[in-house]
Length: 96
Image (tube, rainbow, N blue to C red; front, side):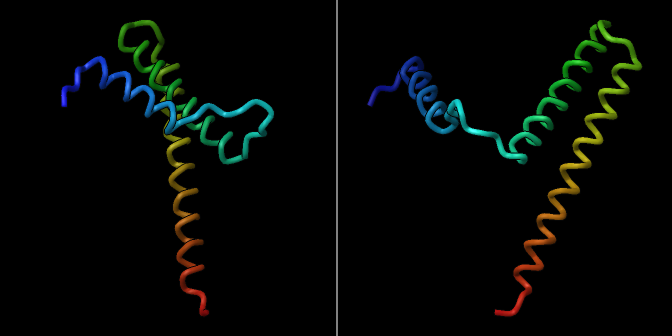
């Protein structure tokens, strides 16, 4: 079996598309999906600001603000995760 790098790349691209299809138009986003997208956007903005600050394109105050926003987002997600795990554990403790 001969697998060339171009063939492998094409197969990977097809598999990646199948694993993460694009949302269809007309379907409303859930609140959790909106929250996840907002979280990802906040982290991406923080990374961009950090890169700009390292190259001298952003001032230190913008960097501190972006890092604080990223920290708040991560703390919020970890708190939410802890609450979900706690609720799941409470469900498991319920008598049948």
